Image 1 (tube, rainbow, N blue to C red):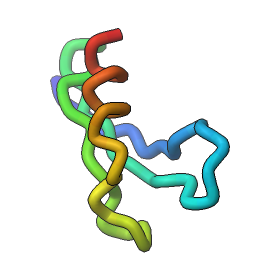
Image 2 (cartoon, rainbow, N blue to C red):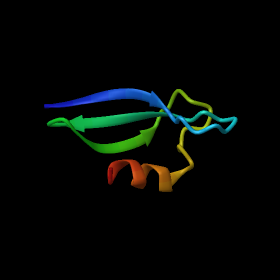
Image 3 (cartoon, one colour):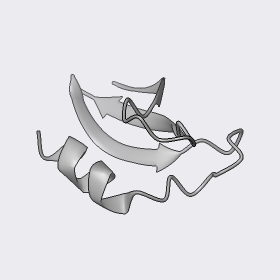
Image 4 (cartoon, rainbow, N blue to C red):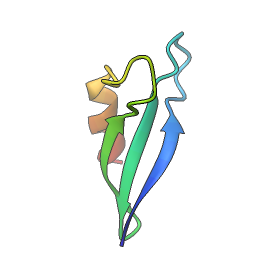
Length: 54
């Protein structure tokens, strides 16, 4: 079953990017920028890749 978890980047930068994590069977399968955040692209793409590989 798939569901979405809303979150924010924990790194100490001024943007505090908001993101949406799609979880399937207890595992994160995608992370994308929140369309409601002023910086919707979640510009730190390397952080997304790192988080999904954890």
